[in-house]
Image 1: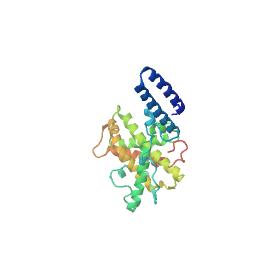
Image 2: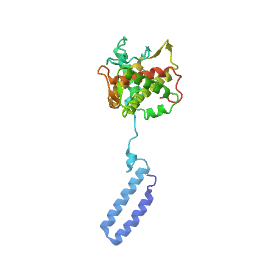
Image 3: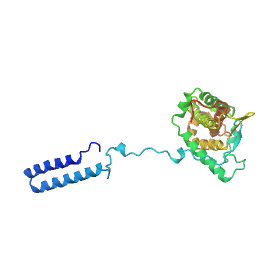
Image 4: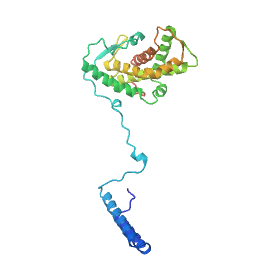
Length: 267
């Protein structure tokens, strides 16, 4: 409205148009012109006084600014996020769909808080744009992704899985994405707690990390299974292909904990 004419100009234009209307069309059109002009002058004056605003006709101006959903925002820190010991993952640990840390005595309230934090963190990791591309471009993080993928492929071969050459690139990419998510989760932990404390060959992490690992793998399983099966020519009936996803993510998470705090690829 910065370009809108001021009230005196509107009144002057109304007077000129009224004279023209009176000379050419008569009294009734003149009354109509004067009514419209006076109304416009009143509205302009009210707008300049800030009594009302006009909506822009441009579509872009009407579009509301994007606001993150609740899950995008970091939830409050749980009242208790205990330190737990995390050893190198074994694929059998993911065979049973049990609640995270079922063997640890945690109250229902603490479990709910841990799961809430893990849900928000998992969604932010899963929805991170171009996560795999950023990981591949980061010399600090990519070696952990590659190592985790190779460990998963070796595990699959040892369990009797045969790969299809034409589809294996899709399978490799699916595993690499899971590994990149695990690396990002580990770097998030390092940013919050500093350098990882080790107890022999086991790392000290937080209980919420275990919840986040399960949340990510549960959500990604349905999306990634078609990519996994695209690269598998033969599989034994006793091994679940879906287990490659949590195993890869947890392995990359475990490997990245040995590194220093992230410098480039940070959440």
